[in-house]
Image 1 (cartoon, rainbow, N blue to C red):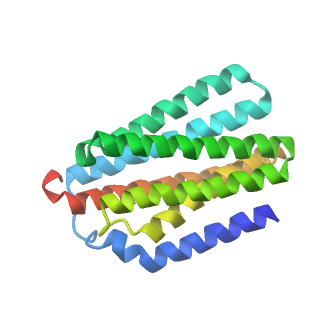
Image 2 (cartoon, helix red, strand yellow):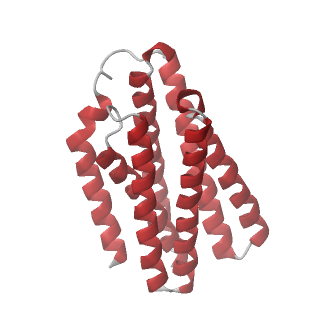
Length: 212
């Protein structure tokens, strides 16, 4: 049932993005500056790093490799700091620090879900889902407040909760050793990270055109 719910979440998020994508993509028909292209690539690398290291935590934990899980978790934190610091030149250290705290909350909720999933604890999974959704709303609110014209809150909530749903779907695949399903989820996760990174880069370029 939960897997069906994840598919529904992802479908609704895709429809939401299609409905409001002009707010994110307005003006992107024009040629992109080298600075914008470089920013997109840098953000794609950072967000792909996020899912790479969280995946390593999930896989190593399921395999019982605590040493590998520890190293992966350390890199989750380093990566979150790098993602947060990417907004520092635009919004300052307080905003970067707040984003870092929210990204830590995102990982904490995902880890709670992982622990519950591997233990077969449905109540724990449900509680973690609520935290993941709340955290997605908090991150979306922060970004929308920083750039209200270019980062619509509802769109960001949909994108971020769909991202959380990908994590959960991946973890459940590891829990049941359904590695074929996990491989499919991984491809969706990468594409989704590109979407988020490009939306963030595009919003920055519109709000700070002189920097791009």
